[in-house]
Length: 177
Length: 437
Image (cartoon, rainbow over all chains, first blue to last red; front, side):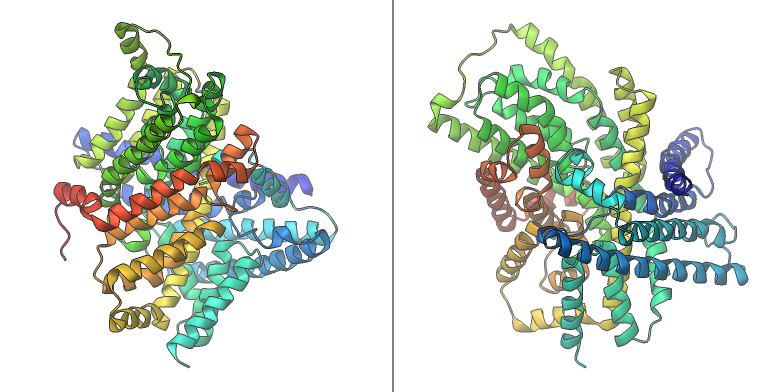
């Protein structure tokens, strides 16, 4: 179970990375084709969709790396028992929020699938196809948050907490903004 | 219920959620949901979807992951060693000698990298050991790196400027151009401080200069070529209008990969690490932007920003008083939260106010970027402090104290840019034409 879940997060992270690098490929291809007088129809739409997919699909993966920022100023100063309780409240709230995001995304995309809405722009495909990256990303994000919550209430230390501790000590601070 | 009451309720809720350690993007979404659900008739779930999707599926914003990736690639090359080799023979004549490598190295790297911590770390990892080996004063060396690292945000390309441009709906290109002269100003202030410091403390700068012929110096300067070519190329295609910022960023990635390949540091592993690092960082930023976009939608429905803007223009504050108050608020915010959150949390409220008071939004962007730079070096939360603390194996407070003179130089830069807004607005207006107003 643990390994399956970890694989899921890494796999979605890799998929997001592929989307991100594809942005560069599409942009360069478009520029190259323009040079030789060809038109890459709909490149702008594809780039926008890839940008969204790279963000949404990476949510769960980034979350587990402790890189979604939050204000640790107050809760980090609590004594261990209080710190644990605060973490449970924050993470519990996160489960609700991400659950809501998942529901909102799934609901909206279901509607656009039901009414067969077509993308506005040069690429005339049903809009639910690119929008699925949001639903899928939110789903994996939800699984990741729930997973960490279960780890926390069963007495373990969530992966993002370990990663955050590493960031604080500055080990890979180069990845901070 | 009056608009002001609603504003206070939402503000307190946001504070509680942020202080409670909820992830920033989620906290913004919760506040937005609360505001929409209870104070407007607009369905929150529809707003959530449209804000999240609309802010992320954006062609303009695609420049952000590209510039992030470019920085991640260059961080893992030998660029910083080459920069040190190329710059050091040319700066020995200035009082303070190699200390200036910190400033100019950061400034040049900032022109290919959009992040402050990455600039600081890249230059620091070479300059810090080299300077201490030669007996330079550690404190000033750390302080100058800490301060100059923040140039990554001001000198284009800049991730924080993209975030601001998207939030304020101004042109990314204009923001980039506006950063050029304030960047030069800040470099001069930093270098000027080091010169004055070195003249006042003559004992603290080692006198030994490596004897080097002019030809040798020129030969060493060739180390700078790859970086300068990349800068010239990316800025060139962007500012001449050959390519948009997003396209230029994609070319930048290509150029960065070429430099990494040329210097032999492009391996399968380094490529993968840079790509995954870029994916996480840009995911974090885009998620915050999504949350902020939902909060802006909520703000628009509740009418809070409009009410505040009307209040500000009715109260007839002097514009400078307004700017002063905002500067103090941002300085305080910057101590506790990171720069990107600082911008997106406040733009939907502050920008209508600034607009109503008659300020130029591009100028205000530079003003806010300078304040975000300061936030990088003020404790307890300052990313440059975290970076240097590990490198120098010193306490964060020691690094923060070392950075105080440079903190003062940055405040000075804010004053100068406020007194002479043309420093920021002249170049974008000259190149791209003045704004309509």
